[in-house]
Length: 195
Ligand code: VGL
Ligand code: ZN
Image (cartoon, rainbow, N blue to C red; front, side):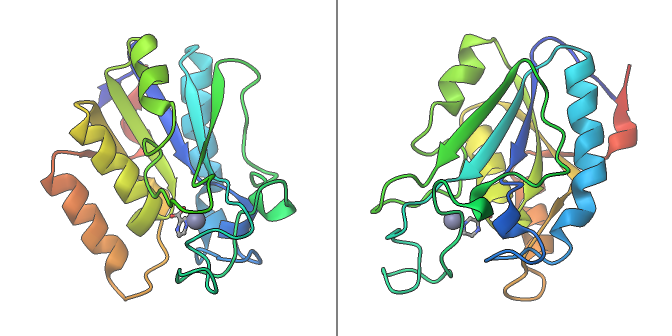
């Protein structure tokens, strides 16, 4: 499906942080393989002056999602550590970009970029009606951000060539994609964005 970008569109880049990349604390297999494509999406929005939102996991070191604190994950994306930084190759626009930190208090986790953040109000105050979502992990934070956007009434596109999953159970990412599409998300790839 071809889509022409308009002034009410925003890009959401989910959790492209070092800990989620190969060599990190909670790596998404081949998570870095999507960076060139994610950068193409970022460039497409940047060129048109459209906003780009970067979510990041930003946990305290005693976070509830960590093993030893009641959770299932190894410690990852601890605030102000190198692992919480965005990947060095990720394109970050100089203007009209926003960093959305989530999972910032010890006792709450957030897989959705909308949960406990200002993301919705930042989108609404800019008149954004359609969101385009890429990043990691397909089966956790991408899925929940897409479903969150749909629930809030945003037209939500999932950028299939700009997402990667962890697949704790084989097939998790594919099932996540099917769930997003069945709930109203629209699938796109980078060639679908036209001028
Ligand atoms: C994520 C597991 C734990 C994600 C965050 O960004 O998808 N997954 N924390
Ligand atoms: Zn996390």
